[in-house]
Length: 201
Ligand code: 5GP
Image (cartoon, rainbow, N blue to C red):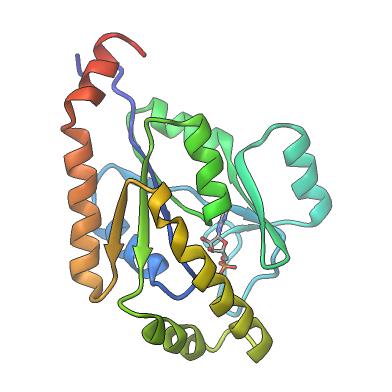
């Protein structure tokens, strides 16, 4: 029954500034058996970002080459750059029984949902839109035009919460992380997940 158990695919999205990055980082520090997928992007590295750690930074040509070779389980254009989740890492780790965390945008999450029905989809929400604006502004990594663009996108994106299985309001990082951890634990105890394994679906 336990041999050959597959890991859980946990997909986390939310508008820019909701704090999903911080929550995911915190969760990874404290949750055994959970690994983060590192995305491939055509975005230029920000100050302090490391290739192979934050992202794999590639050219458009390299990215499109991976698309052609079916190297992604999903990919999307976000704020003018491409981002994709490498297929090999995800499938290998899930196959080994590791839980895999994807922190990706909504377009990508919806693609994953089509293919991996058994995934768990969590939407991180800011405590309020006012707070969200402050967080996007305070981060200081984007210029004014980019801030406005991200804020407008956030307004639209929040409606997509209904396509997810869970929402977590990030009013306080520790509390939000604990909720996400609890969701994963509860998902692993679901009877229908267990049945899926028994009948080999
Ligand atoms: P940033 O440029 O701020 O690191 O990320 C911008 C957006 O791209 C965020 O919403 C982030 O979750 C999303 N993102 C990061 N990696 C991926 C990925 O592999 N696929 C998709 N679809 N979105 C991603």
